[in-house]
Length: 166
Image 1 (cartoon, rainbow, N blue to C red):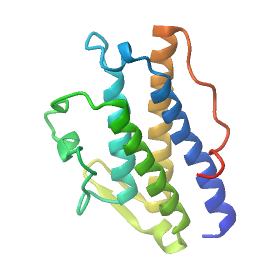
Image 2: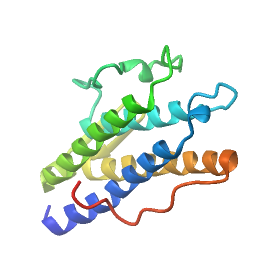
Image 3: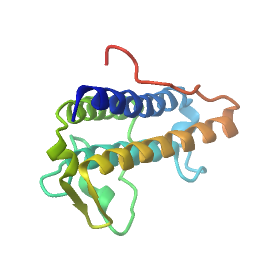
């Protein structure tokens, strides 16, 4: 895959990650783990970052999120983690996901783009999985922005392309 396409893919995927980060940073402390809200803000951020990381791995086999996160997000019972993760923990996970995403895209070859990535719930080529993953991140970034708008009447602005220097 040539540099032109990898650059475009990173600029747009990176922008989706930046929008997720902006929502995370804009969330007031009182909303972060407000148990009266469903879904809870922190959990949407965590869920999004977990699947960003997982999908960038290409399969469940051999995947393990960094500590303190676990594989519980794949539990069919759908239980929430034992405790709400902090903003700081999720900012670190977001930085991990951003680096992994950029490295994955930089290393993308035509062969890797065509390779099948199979999960129990989806079977896609590597290239299509990247787009699927980007749509998932953007979907939840939009959900978080809606929660912010409805709760505090403010939400971060649209990001056109990834931050420079990332």
